[in-house]
Image (cartoon, rainbow, N blue to C red; front, side, top):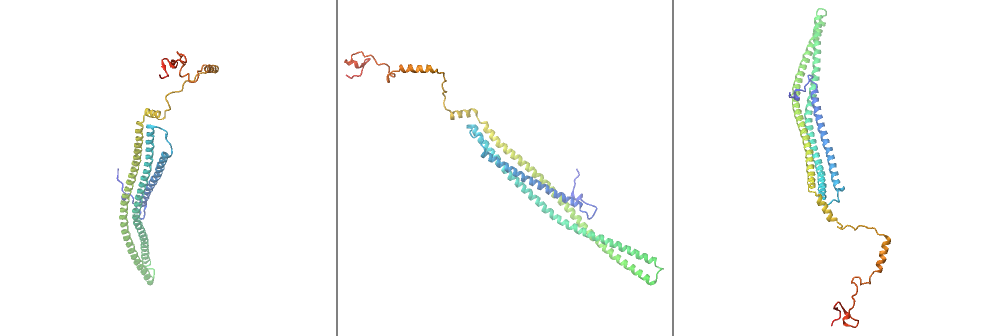
Length: 335
């Protein structure tokens, strides 16, 4: 592909034209405008990242998420909230990084603007001086051409009236011719001086225009390179944020891998159990049978204290006999 250069492609055949120069300046200004737009984009993206990060952090602090879970799943949820909080912090950090990159872009843009302004001031002065000298040269040329026509007319008047006028009139014609020749010489000399001055200024302008084109091309190359690298860095930062977020989510996944359904169920049973014996079956009870059974039970009820010990033994001796106090050979009377 053919290499293009500013200094070889922004000329004009019109000496006073600044079309090529203006085209370069417009392009450079548009380039700085594009940098400003990207700078504003980074700032807005930073605001979005910061807001998102803060909302994630507030979400982990204010919104419950499985707060009554137990054992291994509870620990996994705690890790999950910690990692989400970390993701929020990471987005806030990204916002700060983006603002720093926007500041760097602004510094670069302002630096280029300052350098361009210095060159523009030099070129504006040269353009002004060139145009002024060109105007003076054009005016000097017009005066010179007019003096040439005046001299020619004076010469023709002398030739036409050589034998038709008096001696005094001829003298006047020769005086006018001499004056026209003198005026022509003065205008010719002044015209040549102006042309020489203009040529000197033209060469100076051409050299400065060439140097300005080279400078502007270098500046534009630096701008494109800086802009490209800034965008590349921005994408790397976004990718890094995604990687960091995935690493945090992976930490949660690892905690879920050690989550045990059996352990959580066992933990709940041991922690909250209420007993291992279920209630007895509920049976049907006939009202009348229930009352009859209750009456029969009252009639057959033993005297208090006897029911637990059984019936009294039958004595084997008389009341007056010492053996009366024995029960099955066991005596309550000490001999």
